[in-house]
Structure formats: C-alpha cells, structure tokens
Image 1 (cartoon, rainbow, N blue to C red):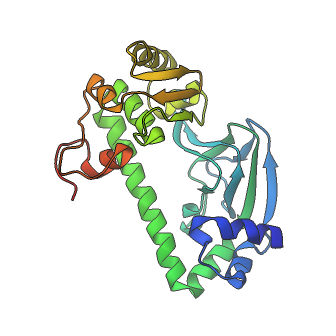
Image 2 (spheres, rainbow, N blue to C red):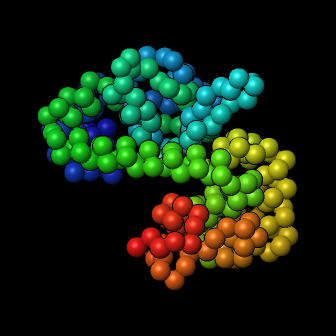
Length: 250
C-alpha cells in the first residue's frame, strides 16, 4: 500500500492530496503488469477501476465497421486511463485498451475515487479541470482530422512532440502503423510524407526517432500558419490556442 501511495503522490492530479486521501484512492489498489499486445479492458466491459500508467505505452481504440481499429488516444507513463468512465452510468469502458509495449499500471477501484470526490470539493474541481483539458484535446484532435490534410496532420503531430525546440530529438511513442491510424492516414502515406520532409532537410531521422530541423519551413511546406507577432504561443500551444489561424490569442 505505501509503495502505491508514493507513486500516486507523484502524479500531477494527486500531488496536493494528503496521505489519508491517497489512502482512500488506493484502497484495494494493486500493481499489474501487461505484456505487449495484451488487453487491459475491452469496449463495453463493466468499468470497476481506472488505471495510472507507471511504464510502457498503451493505445485506446475502438474496432471500426471496416475492420480497422480507430485509435483515439495513445497514453504513457504518468497518464491516467479510464478515469472519466468512472462517473458514467451505466459504468462501462467506451474504448478498448491494448499495450503497445510491456506496461506496468496501478489499478485503482472506482469507489475510492467517487468517495474522495464526495469528500473533497477542491479535488473534485481539479479533476473537472483535468477532464475539461481532455475534452479540449479531443475537440482539437477532431478538428485536425476533419479540417487538415494528411501532410498537415503529420506536421502538427511532430511539432506537438518537439514543441518547436530546434534539433530536439524525440522518439515516436507508437509504431508507424498505429500512428498512421491515429492520424487517419495510411502507413504508406505516412512513410511517403516523412521521406519527403526528410529529403527536403526539414526533419531528420528514421524509424521512430525524429527531429524537426526547421519548424517554420516545415509549416510552410504543409501550408500551415505561423504564429503572428501578437501570438505568444509556440508549437502545439499555438495550434490549440489559435485554431490554425493568424488571429491573436492574447
């Protein structure tokens, strides 16, 4: 129990809670390990618990009518999984969760979270703030998938990873096949775009390790707007705040 409390205390959402509150959350909690390609839960299953990722990468998806999985989110170390579902009635998982790599997670029972929300309004507000942030992310993701073209989606994803830090190397958290599904492009299109940007000297790398060499030129190549003089954001913050336009976000 004490080991789980120590891990929870380091999570951003739980960092302000005292030991008693953390104990309420992790009562009956336990650590679980999942092999690569193992499922944590399936869409439609009764949701009795949510999870804190402590290592590994997991994708949240729903099988499509065309037989292809629709990837909604990729989560990693420090992320919560299915905490929003704990407040639904009936309480079922809306997505399936599959490990992209060996994963370690802390399983946290639903009743502990509900009890703490009832007892601590300040924590409830923090949780609502986190859920609001997730909702905005989902709206922006939908906007990206429905408004932008394939090249723009790939560029925006790379810029979100690098946050416009020149020559900053990042490792893609998922395989090219999963990333293609997440960006709603074919693996062949993703490979072709990365090759084209690399040959143009705008990005560098291969496989899952990449660096954005020239963010402004990469935006121009994808016909994406650059922050204007009044916008104090950068990278993904600019895209989220200014919604792909040249208007001020101040």
